Length: 193
Image (cartoon, rainbow, N blue to C red; front, side, top):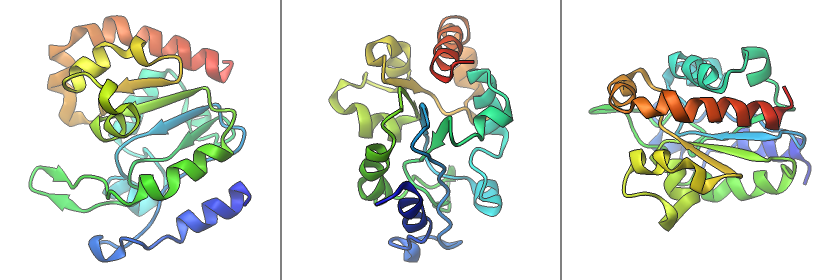
Protein backbone atom coordinates (compact mmCIF):
# COMPACT_ATOMS: atom_id res chain seq x y z
CA UNK A 1 0.00 0.00 0.00
CA UNK A 2 1.32 3.47 -0.85
CA UNK A 3 1.73 6.24 1.72
CA UNK A 4 -1.00 8.21 -0.07
CA UNK A 5 -3.45 5.29 0.22
CA UNK A 6 -2.53 4.73 3.89
CA UNK A 7 -3.12 8.41 4.72
CA UNK A 8 -6.44 8.29 2.88
CA UNK A 9 -7.48 5.28 5.02
CA UNK A 10 -6.37 6.98 8.24
CA UNK A 11 -8.24 10.20 7.38
CA UNK A 12 -11.39 8.16 6.67
CA UNK A 13 -11.12 6.20 9.94
CA UNK A 14 -14.19 6.18 12.15
CA UNK A 15 -13.33 3.26 14.45
CA UNK A 16 -14.01 5.25 17.63
CA UNK A 17 -16.56 7.72 16.20
CA UNK A 18 -19.16 6.89 18.87
CA UNK A 19 -16.72 8.10 21.58
CA UNK A 20 -15.97 11.44 19.91
CA UNK A 21 -18.37 14.25 20.83
CA UNK A 22 -17.33 16.32 17.79
CA UNK A 23 -16.99 13.32 15.50
CA UNK A 24 -13.88 11.98 13.76
CA UNK A 25 -11.43 14.29 12.01
CA UNK A 26 -8.08 12.46 11.97
CA UNK A 27 -5.15 14.89 11.86
CA UNK A 28 -1.91 13.40 10.56
CA UNK A 29 0.84 14.44 8.16
CA UNK A 30 3.49 12.07 6.81
CA UNK A 31 5.64 11.27 3.82
CA UNK A 32 8.19 8.63 2.88
CA UNK A 33 10.94 11.27 2.99
CA UNK A 34 10.26 12.64 6.49
CA UNK A 35 13.36 12.55 8.68
CA UNK A 36 11.69 13.61 11.93
CA UNK A 37 8.45 12.30 13.46
CA UNK A 38 6.49 14.12 16.14
CA UNK A 39 4.24 11.94 18.29
CA UNK A 40 2.12 13.97 20.68
CA UNK A 41 -1.12 13.24 22.48
CA UNK A 42 -4.16 14.18 20.38
CA UNK A 43 -5.41 17.27 18.57
CA UNK A 44 -6.99 20.02 20.64
CA UNK A 45 -10.24 21.65 19.62
CA UNK A 46 -8.54 24.35 17.50
CA UNK A 47 -6.58 21.70 15.59
CA UNK A 48 -9.79 19.66 15.19
CA UNK A 49 -11.52 22.69 13.69
CA UNK A 50 -8.70 23.68 11.32
CA UNK A 51 -7.23 20.26 10.52
CA UNK A 52 -3.75 21.77 10.97
CA UNK A 53 -1.60 19.92 13.55
CA UNK A 54 -0.07 21.93 16.38
CA UNK A 55 -1.96 25.01 15.18
CA UNK A 56 -2.19 26.53 18.66
CA UNK A 57 -0.10 28.00 21.50
CA UNK A 58 1.40 24.55 22.22
CA UNK A 59 2.57 24.29 18.62
CA UNK A 60 4.12 27.73 18.72
CA UNK A 61 6.14 26.79 21.80
CA UNK A 62 7.11 23.42 20.30
CA UNK A 63 8.46 25.19 17.18
CA UNK A 64 10.46 27.51 19.47
CA UNK A 65 11.88 24.51 21.33
CA UNK A 66 12.87 22.91 18.02
CA UNK A 67 14.08 26.23 16.57
CA UNK A 68 12.22 25.71 13.29
CA UNK A 69 9.99 28.03 11.30
CA UNK A 70 6.36 27.17 10.54
CA UNK A 71 7.41 26.58 6.90
CA UNK A 72 9.86 23.86 7.95
CA UNK A 73 7.56 22.47 10.66
CA UNK A 74 4.71 22.00 8.18
CA UNK A 75 6.88 20.60 5.39
CA UNK A 76 5.68 16.99 5.46
CA UNK A 77 8.65 15.98 3.31
CA UNK A 78 10.82 16.78 6.35
CA UNK A 79 8.59 16.41 9.41
CA UNK A 80 5.78 13.91 9.98
CA UNK A 81 3.16 14.38 12.69
CA UNK A 82 1.26 11.37 14.02
CA UNK A 83 -0.27 11.78 17.49
CA UNK A 84 -1.22 8.92 19.77
CA UNK A 85 -4.85 9.73 18.99
CA UNK A 86 -5.57 11.30 15.60
CA UNK A 87 -8.90 12.88 16.59
CA UNK A 88 -9.94 15.40 19.23
CA UNK A 89 -10.98 13.19 22.18
CA UNK A 90 -13.35 15.70 23.80
CA UNK A 91 -13.33 17.72 26.99
CA UNK A 92 -12.78 16.27 30.46
CA UNK A 93 -12.85 17.75 33.99
CA UNK A 94 -9.28 19.07 33.81
CA UNK A 95 -8.82 19.76 30.11
CA UNK A 96 -9.01 17.50 27.10
CA UNK A 97 -9.63 13.79 27.53
CA UNK A 98 -6.74 11.34 26.94
CA UNK A 99 -6.08 10.25 23.35
CA UNK A 100 -8.27 7.39 22.20
CA UNK A 101 -6.36 4.11 22.75
CA UNK A 102 -7.38 2.64 19.36
CA UNK A 103 -5.27 4.89 17.09
CA UNK A 104 -1.65 4.08 17.84
CA UNK A 105 -2.03 0.26 17.71
CA UNK A 106 -4.17 0.54 14.60
CA UNK A 107 -2.02 2.93 12.53
CA UNK A 108 1.46 3.71 13.90
CA UNK A 109 3.25 0.54 12.77
CA UNK A 110 1.96 0.94 9.21
CA UNK A 111 3.06 4.57 9.12
CA UNK A 112 6.51 3.79 10.51
CA UNK A 113 7.03 1.05 7.91
CA UNK A 114 6.54 3.68 5.20
CA UNK A 115 8.82 6.24 6.86
CA UNK A 116 12.20 4.56 6.58
CA UNK A 117 14.05 7.89 6.54
CA UNK A 118 12.96 8.87 10.08
CA UNK A 119 16.04 9.44 12.24
CA UNK A 120 14.44 11.15 15.23
CA UNK A 121 11.08 10.71 16.98
CA UNK A 122 9.95 13.36 19.45
CA UNK A 123 7.81 11.68 22.11
CA UNK A 124 5.71 14.47 23.58
CA UNK A 125 3.98 13.66 26.85
CA UNK A 126 3.44 10.51 28.89
CA UNK A 127 1.10 8.74 26.47
CA UNK A 128 3.67 8.66 23.67
CA UNK A 129 6.50 7.89 26.08
CA UNK A 130 4.63 5.02 27.72
CA UNK A 131 3.73 3.51 24.35
CA UNK A 132 7.20 3.73 22.80
CA UNK A 133 9.56 3.54 25.79
CA UNK A 134 7.61 1.06 27.91
CA UNK A 135 9.58 -0.23 30.89
CA UNK A 136 12.58 1.93 30.06
CA UNK A 137 10.69 5.08 31.11
CA UNK A 138 11.71 6.88 34.26
CA UNK A 139 9.42 6.80 37.30
CA UNK A 140 7.58 9.85 35.91
CA UNK A 141 7.65 12.28 32.99
CA UNK A 142 10.21 14.55 34.66
CA UNK A 143 12.69 11.69 35.15
CA UNK A 144 12.11 10.38 31.64
CA UNK A 145 12.73 13.81 30.11
CA UNK A 146 15.70 14.50 32.41
CA UNK A 147 17.37 11.31 31.13
CA UNK A 148 16.59 12.03 27.45
CA UNK A 149 20.11 11.03 26.37
CA UNK A 150 19.28 7.44 27.40
CA UNK A 151 16.76 7.21 24.56
CA UNK A 152 18.83 8.81 21.81
CA UNK A 153 19.57 8.58 18.95
CA UNK A 154 16.02 7.59 17.90
CA UNK A 155 13.73 8.87 20.67
CA UNK A 156 13.72 12.28 22.33
CA UNK A 157 11.15 12.51 25.17
CA UNK A 158 9.66 15.94 25.90
CA UNK A 159 6.97 17.36 28.16
CA UNK A 160 3.88 18.71 26.45
CA UNK A 161 4.46 22.35 25.42
CA UNK A 162 1.01 23.32 26.71
CA UNK A 163 0.58 26.69 28.45
CA UNK A 164 -0.65 24.55 31.38
CA UNK A 165 2.93 23.28 31.81
CA UNK A 166 4.51 26.69 32.49
CA UNK A 167 4.84 25.82 36.19
CA UNK A 168 6.69 22.59 35.30
CA UNK A 169 9.05 24.55 33.05
CA UNK A 170 9.79 27.05 35.85
CA UNK A 171 10.43 24.25 38.38
CA UNK A 172 12.76 22.42 35.99
CA UNK A 173 15.19 25.08 34.80
CA UNK A 174 17.57 22.40 33.51
CA UNK A 175 15.07 21.81 30.70
CA UNK A 176 15.70 25.21 29.13
CA UNK A 177 19.39 25.40 30.01
CA UNK A 178 20.58 21.88 29.14
CA UNK A 179 17.96 19.97 27.17
CA UNK A 180 16.69 22.60 24.72
CA UNK A 181 20.13 23.44 23.28
CA UNK A 182 20.64 19.70 22.62
CA UNK A 183 17.16 19.38 21.09
CA UNK A 184 17.77 22.31 18.71
CA UNK A 185 21.16 20.96 17.69
CA UNK A 186 19.86 17.43 17.01
CA UNK A 187 16.76 18.67 15.16
CA UNK A 188 18.95 20.88 12.95
CA UNK A 189 21.33 17.98 12.25
CA UNK A 190 18.50 15.59 11.35
CA UNK A 191 16.77 18.13 9.12
CA UNK A 192 20.10 19.31 7.68
CA UNK A 193 19.36 22.96 8.50
